[in-house]
Picture 1 (cartoon, rainbow, N blue to C red):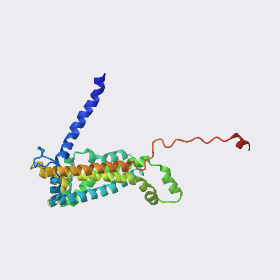
Picture 2 (cartoon, rainbow, N blue to C red):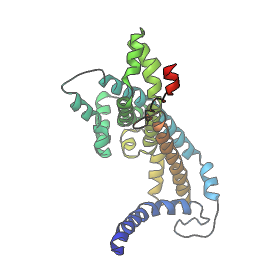
Picture 3 (cartoon, rainbow, N blue to C red):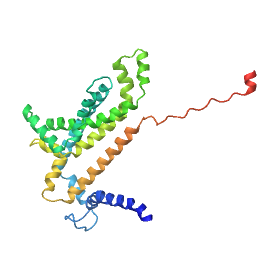
Picture 4 (tube, rainbow, N blue to C red):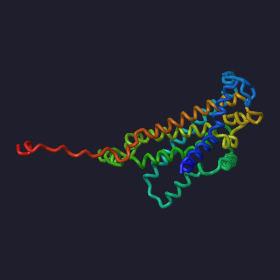
Length: 278
């Protein structure tokens, strides 16, 4: 019986080792003194110094930050308005439209990248930062949409109804009541979209131009010639930034959420019999 109870724990431990051991090794060898990634020769920060002196790498980083920020802002605007609008309409095809809005998450990235490339070519758009922003905004919209929709489901409709009873219009209700309550979900979706855009490689390769290079593409092209400790240092920094964004996204998503069940109703205090007679 003891062996049976230990088997799930051993299996879980094996899966965790397989998943996270490569990440631990990348972080560990980013502090390696040797130029050969597979040989440990001592602790050093030389590769972080080399990374911070690489102008081409920082130019690609700047392009990635601009791209991720633009895509997250665009996804926040479209995803928020879409989720809010669906709560106001009654359509027979509502479920089908909501399912279609989730397709960018379910479609493989290589197919999505080819579709974007063909579509932008038909429109005659020059490949570069514009096409990158449009493509990244498109596949980031579902992340904001899902979080905002979940927040709308948990909101108390009586707050908006009370504002309308006091004479507020739909626009006033949205900006004064609904939008502040949705702010944590919107920020959470923006942070998640920022992280997804910052890490994207496949779609970016299909829609980028010759003069625009993002950080993931820069890393991908350098890895073809071999993994260097500089790439390990860069991956370590990107991993830390991504984990930070994911944690902030989860924290902001929980801010202001009503607790399940609410506060228990306290019984009214019993009155003294002397007070009742008086």
